[in-house]
Image (tube, rainbow, N blue to C red; front, side, top):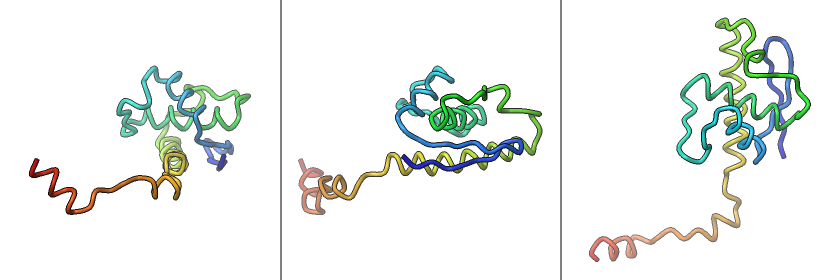
Length: 118
C-alpha cells in the first residue's frame, strides 16, 4: 500500500487508497462506490480525501466538519490539491497489472469486422 501526505489547514495527514478507503467513502456518503460515483462535487472530493485519511490512520480525530475548517477559499484549494493526490492513488489502485493486461484479449480488426457483419 502506497501512502502519501497531504496538508490541510497547516497539518499533514497520511492518505492511502485501498479497499478500506472505498468502504469509508460509502459510510461517509451513503453512496455505492461502484455505481458511477462522480467526484465533480466538492462534497464527494472531501469525502474521498477523508476516507483516504481514515484508511491511512484509523485513529485520526478528523471528521467531515472539522476537515472543512474555516470553510474559506484557501481551505477549498487545499482540499482540491489533496483530492488530486488521492485521485492518483485511486488510479494506481485500479491499474491493471502487466499480467492482467496480457490476459485481456483485445479483438483484432478481423474479429471486429466479423462481429459487425453478424
